[in-house]
Length: 189
Picture (cartoon, rainbow, N blue to C red):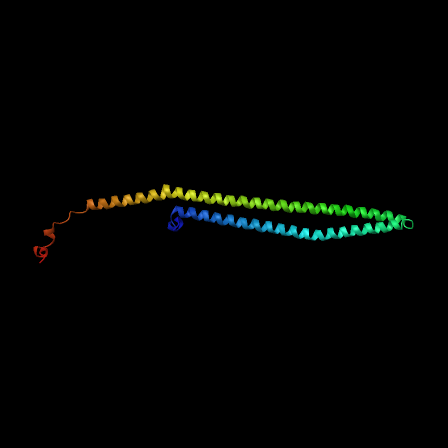
């Protein structure tokens, strides 16, 4: 059985182990909370990315359509010269908008990647901290056992032996056998 199951509730070691167990529970709750927050952030950024991609596709299609219209406008340039200039300008603005949106999506992807790496790093750091705490707890338990519990048991055994020896030395002398029993009782026959 483990050392924890052998200690009494009044023993200071029991209190130490209880505090350490409570610390482990707090660490576990903190890790779960961090995981929930990270998963929500990742989910939100994923939703944002999914919403932005169709817009990029639409802007790209619109840009292609505007280019086609611009090409058609050039064919009719003699009749609609002024209109052709406006369509070309609109096409340029659509292209710039598409480039800006693509840059924003790229930055969002980088941010999501950085957030995931940072979260992984923090989780690994917490895991290392738990491992270190567990190792320190084991070392402390072994130290307390070897320096306090074992010597206390040995001292208790020695004191019990000394007490028993003093009881034997302080007890009255035994009676002679012939005083205790009559002669008839001694005869086995």
